[in-house]
Amino acid sequence: MTATLTLAASVFPRLYRDSVALLALASKLERREHIVRAGVVMATSANLRLLAESDMLPDGVVAGADDLLITVKGGDPGAVEDALAFAATTLSSTDEGSSQVSEQRPQTIAEGIASRPGATVVTVSVPGTYAALVAEQALRRGLHVMCFSDNVPVSDEVRLKALAARRRLLMMGPDCGTAVLGGVPLGFANVLRPGPVGIVAASGTGAQEVSCLLDRAGVGTAALIGVGGRDLSSAVGGVMTELALDLLVADRSAEVIVVVSKPPAPAVAERLLARLGKIGADGTPVVACLLGMEDADQPVAVRGTLEGAAIEAARLAGVTLPPAVAEPGPGTGPAGRVLGLYTGGTLAAEAKALLGRAGLAAEVIDLGDDQYTAGRPHPMIDPGARAARIVQAAADPTVGVVLLDVVLGHGAHPDPAGAVAAAVLQARGVDRPMAFVASICGTAADPQGFDAQARTLREAGLLLAGSNAAAARLAIRLAGGAVLSPAPGPSDGAENPGPGDAEGGRR
Image (tube, rainbow, N blue to C red; front, side, top):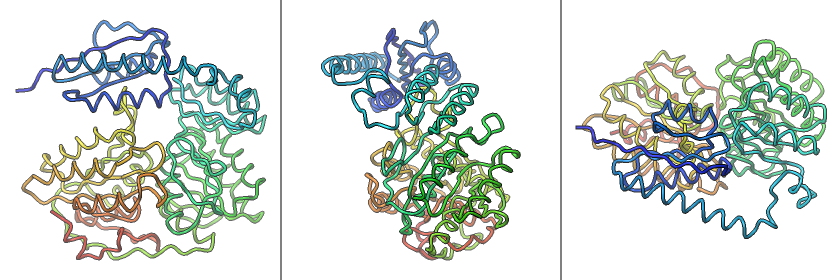
């Protein structure tokens, strides 16, 4: 018999909090006893629609775009009421703390410039309804912008990037999750050693994977410039990618340049490759990582996987990445399909492309997609939703291999491996063979600790791979598929396991 759930909401008129604060509060609410799910959002029309589509909007709620809306679903009415009271108290205490420091804390772009005259970059993390206005204010005051906000109309993106390009300013985003400028990480970003590679990325976790693979091979990063996932679309036309490339070339700090993206619109791809060809001809080696495309070397080095791009960038920087180790042969794994449960969208896309080429029955889910994050924290911040799906996968007799990413760095959960390990140990209770395969996107200097995270996963019986692509190849082999031989590159095992080590890790 299915338990009845209670859904309730509170509206806080004309109260604003940025996206990071909203996600943090939602995460706290979801960790409370008997609470199934919580949504903490500004009540924009887009957010209301997403809440309704995910059955998280109670009937009769009236709220406007300037209002803060909290919805809570739980198995106990009293727990739901207590959670809403806790949220109200938290917001109230934050308000009191803010009022005590209001004289010191800037409230507008103009006040921020006045209080920090040396600042050159503004991060924008407000509801999409207002993000374009705030970003334009910053650009018109001569500041580069990283716009973390999503749900910004593409027409606003085109207009803002045209303004930024005229002023030779970066407009990173909208929906830009990752950047590292002058060694300073912004958004979801890893702690990277300085070095010769400059990265321009229309992909957050894609840029993280490439930069982390390079870092672990001893190759540092000069800059990582995110441009937003729509920049290389036909509507936007790659305006900010072009400017970012210009700035990297002019700065001369990047000895190798990598562009990371899902396949651009055809006309945009043609212009991009022509631009990269000119940069290469002028003396700066370049790599185009266009996910899912076939590898090519002429007229520009194009790589269809993140791992392949890292291998080529390292080679151009004078470093050879260790060759991949032998993997378990076909047919050595459990019977059943591959299920990918991902927190990184580009990592999911890379795995899906590799699994598709192998012709396997596989399903890859990007749990960071809007349909899964409506009113709740991104799974890289709160791993609870994915942990529940890992346990559910064990109850599905068609699933033989579960494929996972673990993303470290600033902005990510303090112990993502711990959440994965706990879920896998619970899933191990099923009386049938299953394999759990994971890769870690991170560096030794990340706050979570790469080695500690790897140890946690290993102790829970997961098979670790040295890259996301290697993890996908291992999943294919375990499920009995054929794998195209990868180019020599990062080790396919965190500790160079041979077939015996991988075989011993299965349950």
